[in-house]
Image (cartoon, rainbow, N blue to C red; front, top):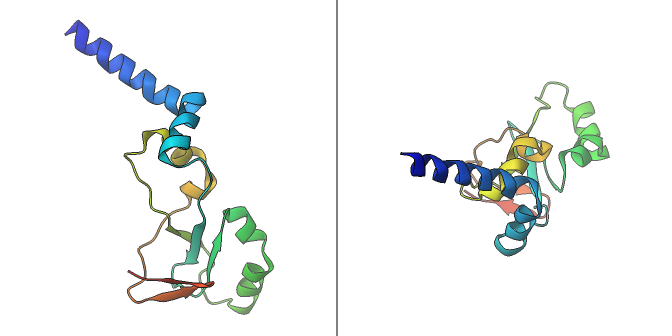
Length: 123
């Protein structure tokens, strides 16, 4: 019983260190996550869709301000379409919890192919 508790303690300690120190950066280099992905943000009705590296850029962009001005009846709340969270990437859990891009609520993919920027989003 004592040995099992020790294993659990070291496992939890490893998860914490992999999200706060250089150990996490090593995992990110070799297994992905070192460079921020391109996020796809859209409104719930898909009237506005954009691909950016940060939600702050989207909120400050002229394109989004123009959409809000011309579509007063539409919902202006932004949701994240892509990328999806992969819970198996334990070294990314810190980013999933504290990064504003990852904390943005996500929505389902559109039912039909949808044009977002120069990319077509398919199911």
